[in-house]
Length: 411
Image (cartoon, rainbow, N blue to C red; front, side, top):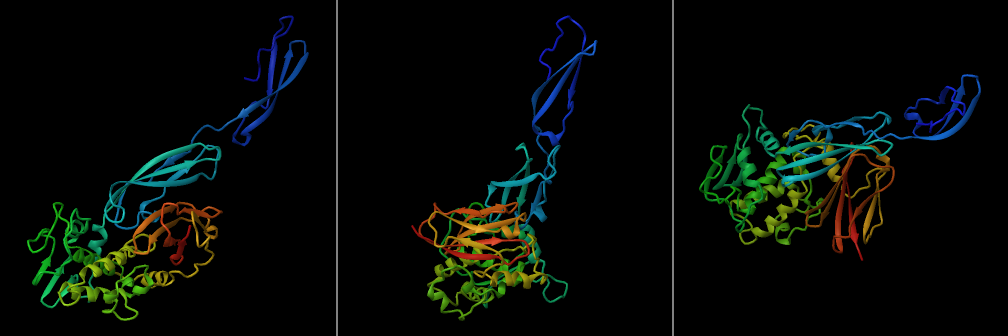
């Protein structure tokens, strides 16, 4: 109220007029208001006051529907975008954060995505979206691949000669169970003698060893199947060179490979190991190499969808990996070497989304940072929790090769 109790000394009736008498979002902040008081004889008095107009209403925020995806949960074109409107702000700032509430992000998980909308006055609204990540989706697509065009899906064949395993369409649920992180492992071992078929009817055959959850306890077989699935789901990766990946491979393994070995060749040699032909005394070295290699691969295209063993878009995907440690256009990283943090200038792509991942030199994923909207200034990544040494930072940007840069941590 602008009037604090105006009155006439003779008790005459008064008419009060306030100017301005109404406000809108354009008036947020301090506004000078005039109060004119007039009696019935036409005599008037004027005073002024300051009226503070504040927006205290949060944006109207609508979350995308809950969804199950097989690939990258950060690909918003697959998982959906939140929408927001506001009574005062035309461009509401949207952001999100993810929390894994079940499972492991890299495999099968349940993710709670909290969307936040903020208007220009700092009012916020939040909503939640549940995203189920299931590898069964892209594995089923990989197993349905018909390479020779005869109308019959081609099985994935593991092993060689007298020790083989044919994995056929319909086995996706078994493979999800097999490849979920086991509670216990045994020494890496070859396939048993003979020829077996996995078609989804029996997920715990007696000729293999499983833990209480139905996961394979043979780490060599687990990593070999996973590599075969990745190369089937995303064929361009078979042409990637091993020396382009940040993996330390034991010299014993390298001796069995050509100088510029591709991942397709690695899988071929792995099948010989499963057949007990090579690396009989060095299976652990091969298993370690495969674990690192698989941590660098994906079943997804750059837009977050499975390639389904199709050739569509594979050349672009291959180029993105060949460009590792090349200068992606308009991306700068500093300082390097670094002690506590590094800054990545992505401002040329301001407003776009990005995913930053930090790996150690064994290929283990150390951290993931999702950016819903790239800012105008540099993005900081904290390195204080990591020891001195070399790490690899990658940045996935829309329509760009994957940026990758080695960072030397020195203190």
